[in-house]
Length: 160
Image 1: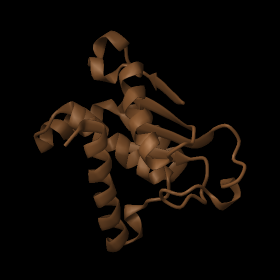
Image 2: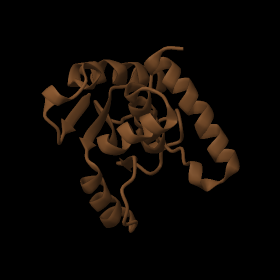
Image 3: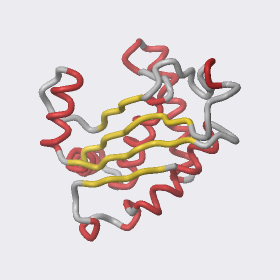
């Protein structure tokens, strides 16, 4: 399952940011990561002001950021179900919520020199990997592993 909410007028967003387009890409990523498992993720597209407030309240960091992830389970091992969910996890594995700042996404795309679509899905995949247990802030080895998985997932979502 995929839920999408946005603080922006849908008519002001590119077609690839429609809920149906996003859901089709989510299904690819979900099927690869958790084969034969129904998963759920919530995606929120917001502005710098709102993500700054979330970052301040939830992480104690008073600045806007590009993406935040709020996992529902902290015992996920990347690419594996949690131990208590292997036999009976119910009909759906809820992973959590990803919040992306559209303002920062557009600015970073321009700064880096690639499309807004590429940057958006880089942030989406980055947030997803945090939901399933990856964390680049734990050290160089974890950062390299997360980057490798990010590249793999981006190839799936965007194509090589």
